[in-house]
Structures are given as structure tokens and as C-alpha cells.
Length: 339
Ligand code: KG4
Ligand code: ZN
Image (cartoon, rainbow, N blue to C red):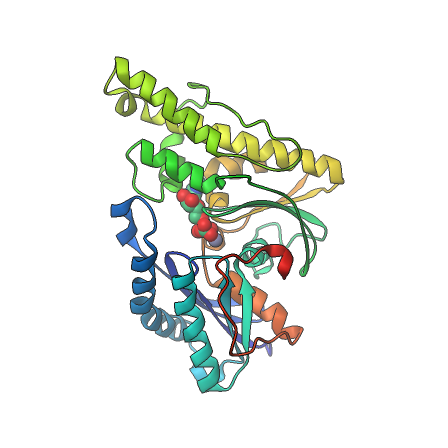
């Protein structure tokens, strides 16, 4: 019970999130999502920064009160340094710096992608327990698609990434073509459950090795919709379930094929998923159906952006005494291989 208390702040995109952890145990994990972007079909950076400004104090107060601790009990502040939207990152980072200064406790910087990958180590994050090293982690979100080998907490090798759109981005763009609100991933997931994944055939990317490409699938869906709408203006409304199921399946098959190829190539039996798209019910089902592998699927609250995952990495860095100085800059681009 004597582990350190870490306050974690995440503001890399459009969610303002604050969590309190005691060691690897989450005491509170609060997120304020920004509905305002739905009107624009994507995240508007300036609006995101302004909303973070408005949200950050109430979210912090709620996180402290739910954890039932006082500011003075905290041992360190962990904060997302990048990658993300610069204006959004700056709100969280400046806030974390001021708090660290006023409470005279260390500041710890966290790479958002490392946090998604290591979210599996949050106590209770996974019904199969935490994965043993080495494991393969498919990290799929709105901004990133990465396949990594995790040999240790701080020994993560990228073996594949997307050459263009991220998997979540492709789902969000396809959703836009279908007239769905941004971000569309969760809605496509829901609609796809009622559809036939074999109803329509969209182009599958043919990329060598373990890299990905998703922009072609979106274009293929666009061309197909344009063609069908010429004959039937109501084509989308009449076939929404099947289009969602078919497009989603094309993306998930690509992800799963690469994951399995990599597992065979590197002879790794532990497979994990992370990031917003790992909330997808079909992807989770496909993983759970694998018989030759031990699979690790995080609880929903630790898949999409959250501050608990930032706190987990913060705690690991606290143990290593890896503290940041107060002149730390935010990094809009912050590749995983620089940690
Ligand atoms: O990790 P995340 O919250 O933010 C980024 O770091 O990007 O991921 C957001 C992405 C969005 O593209 C969203 O459409 C997708 O995750 N997403 C889903 C689901 N829930 C969120 N995609 C597929 N199925 C879902 N259930
Ligand atoms: Zn994320």
C-alpha cells in the first residue's frame, strides 16, 4: 500500500484526461470528451486547445476527489509530452509544470504511444493478467498504426507502421463518406454487427513486410459508393450495415494478417492490442478466436485516450528516477524510438 501517488495528465488530442494512480493501481481516471468537433467532421486544433483550457481544472478536481486524496499527498506529476496536437499538448504540459513547481514534486514526461502499449500493466487492465515479455503489440488509434515487439518496459522495437492513414483514421474517413459523426470508429463497429462483411469487396492493400497502408481502402469505398449512387441515390441508407461490415472487415483482416505474420516470423506467442481501435468488438472477437496464442486485450477504458496509461508509465519512470526539467518542450511528433 506504500507505492507512490502519481497524478497523470493527458491532453494530446481532443480528450482532457486526469488520473490518480497508487503504483500501478488506478484510483481515479476521469476524461472529458469534446463533442464540439463532431460538427466539423474532425478535430479542430484551436477548439481542442480552448476546450482543454476550460476542462483541465474541473477534471483535475474530480480526479482528486474520486481518488479521495489531497494535492499535497501526490509524489509526482506525469504528463503527455507528445505526439499530438501542439496547442493541446501545451495546455496539459504547462498545467503539469505549474503544479509540479507549486507542489515541489517531480515532473515526468510520457510518450503517448508508449503509454498505449504499456496500458496492459495497469492493475486489472486485462482479464488474462499482464503480458509476459516479449510480446507483440498492435497499436491502432486515430493517429497511429504500429506493430511493435515489447521486450521490456523501455525496450520497444517498431517492426511495422502505416505508410499513410492510420487504421482509426481510415474508419473515421469512411464514416464521413457515409455521413456518420466524427469519430466514426465506434459507430461503424455498432452498425457492422448487423451487416454482412462479405457483401462488398474493397481493395486490400498489398504492402510487403509488416508495414500497413489504409488510404487505398478509403478510396476504394469512395469509388464504389460513387458508382452505386449513380444508379441508386439511396444506396448508402439501404446498405449502411453491409458497407460498414465490409469496410471494417477489410481493415481488420489487414491488421490481423500482419499481426499473425509477425508472430510467426519472430516466434512470439504473446499478442496484445492497444489504442482506440482496440475497442472494436470484431477485432477483439477475432483475437479471442486465436487458439495458438496467448492474447491480451485491455479493458475498454484503457483503449481510447486516457490518463491512467500516462500514470502507469509515469510510475515506471518514477522508479527509474527519470524526471523532466521544467524547460521541457511539447513534441507534436515524438517517435517511439526516441524514448
Ligand atoms: O487512441 P485514441 O482514443 O486516440 C488517438 O490516439 O488517436 O483512438 C481514437 C480512434 C478513432 O479513430 C476512433 O474512431 C477509433 O479510435 N475507435 C474505434 C472504436 N472506438 C474508437 N474504432 C473501431 N471500433 C471502435 N469500437
Ligand atoms: Zn491515443
